[in-house]
Image 1 (cartoon, rainbow, N blue to C red):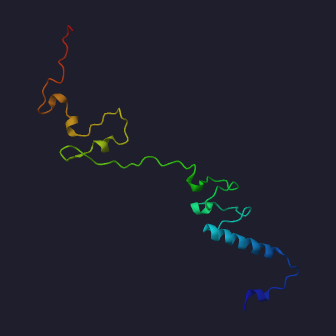
Image 2 (image 1 turned 90 degrees about the horizontal axis):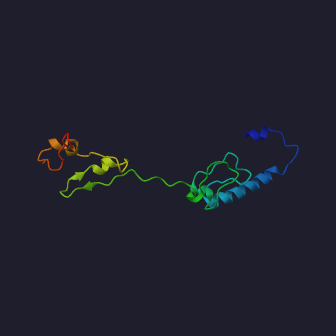
Image 3 (image 1 turned 45 degrees about the vertical axis):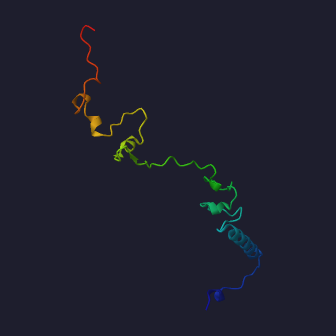
Length: 139
């Protein structure tokens, strides 16, 4: 038993089902060519292109008011990556200076080793020839 056998016969026949059937077949052809179901123009209310396949290798849809980037045109390029290359000094030890400097200004002083934190006068093996003597009260 089906539900349609309980319904009365229609009083008027219209050609609307024929038009709907024709529209469905053309949409199917468009969908088969593009790989996705893209509604026909005028029937795209609520549909938004989301993938490159939705553009079908062509341009944007002017009747759809959302940001569209067909073929990636107009999309801002991503910024530089945040990966830092590992650096090794002359003796083969890993230099962490590049990692410490990453994201800072060029003029900013970055102290990447413990040796740089110790004042010059207190360093082991430091000779005072590098630091000039203080001027006298007269000069």
